[in-house]
Amino acid sequence: MYPLEQWLSDRRTERQHQNGGRCPDCAPRGGCLRLLAVVRRRIDHTTCIPSGPRRLL
Image (spheres, helix red, strand yellow):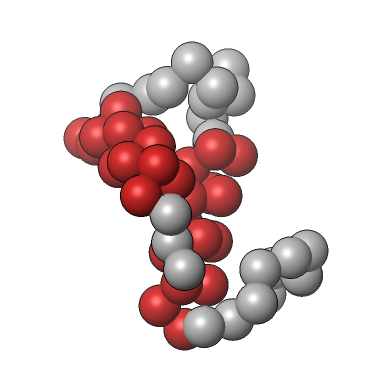
């Protein structure tokens, strides 16, 4: 299940990145591992893929 606290945190992160925005954890030259984790959680939740380390294709 997708805990409410995690969902709220993910929504906050998404809002910070809307329209090219950045969060405090963004890398200086672009890219954000925090946002990548949000996207992965959403994909895992909607496709029922068990979370854990996997290779990016």
